[in-house]
Length: 284
Length: 259
Image (cartoon, rainbow over the protein chains, first blue to last red):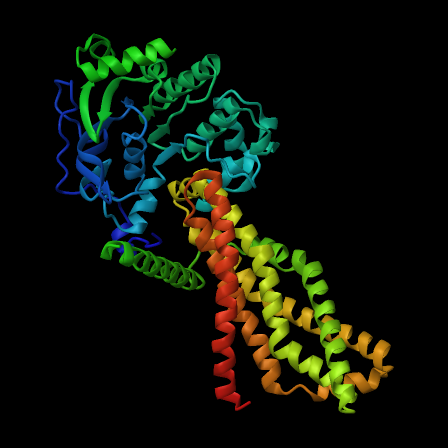
């Protein structure tokens, strides 16, 4: 539970070199060959169980730069688990997880810490630090890295708040003073503080009213279009999924049962996908 | 009853001990590995130490007064009421001061730490820390344990002093004993071994209380209900471990000092 991953000599950490065994496969539904420079995430045959409960059974996924992959599925199907595995918060039982070619499954702690600096994560409830102001929440990662002076950090905080359409004065508020939509936007601003190449979203629109949800989906698209980040959005909100997704994967019983683009999602006759979409559409 | 039913609790208990030991080991290792969060340690010293002053002061004064009251009655029967100060100081410094302070801090601080870290765990704040490349043990556990190690001995000295003063008030009121008589007896009753024992124990207790509370907080599952469960477990386990370790420490110090 509290085991930390093994250490490596600092010489091994100078460069996060791609794993020589890494062979990016073509993204599903794409005819063009894979481009290693643009491939940001690869999950290869990933298995994970908790005791007798198999959560993921042989998952293959890939995301390119500037692309948003939406992972859909019902509750408890292992969607959020995929994000945790990419972040290295969980180690797969078997299989490989590559972030820009670096194998993070069973990676040394220092490698993992460096890889995590390239990833922003928007947690379902925001996961803002209750004891810190919004400004300190945003500045947290930069303070930890100790690579910027206070004036630079203040400027970046203001810039990211502006990116998510929040006024600079919000930086002085405590998380408890924020509405649900503002929390999500602050969480998104915090996630992009280090200008990550990858952003992971765990249910970014859950619990929000349709207008606020639309604001969030617009921000996700703005981030992809302006900064070219690779994103994985985990959601069971089909409206939000269609608004942000370039490609879609449907997870059921730990397996990917469908992959395709928006047109293929809407046209599919896969009964599981069909019933999921119809149920969500009816619910909306 | 199947074998599995019998062995499962034992296996669970062993796993808990193993995980607690790993956390304790990693925390001690973090003491010498950067980054150091001295500001957080300072804040925790305030939370654990300064904010516990009232509760340990009350504990000290009433403990000293009760001890003096009981011993005054008993010792007067033997014409030995002059030894009230000695009895109070020796009992408080060796045993009651460290243990009662630790139990009060376990209740106040242990529950607070477990609740805070438990809430952070269930609201994914700990995951967020890790996702940003920050080690929660260095950021959250180390400052609390460092503060516990420093503040428990300080609080114990305060409890001891106030308890002896409380005893003096009772000695004066019930036995009409003068200030110098009481304090001479109180100080004559103390040896180096008592002072060493009285300061070494809270050091260990401070570690036990904070590491157990952090462990219970970090392993919290099951939402707000789980936070409540962790809080209770932190206080119960820390209190029991304080009492158990007190026995072994007392035994150890008797072996070392011979009394």
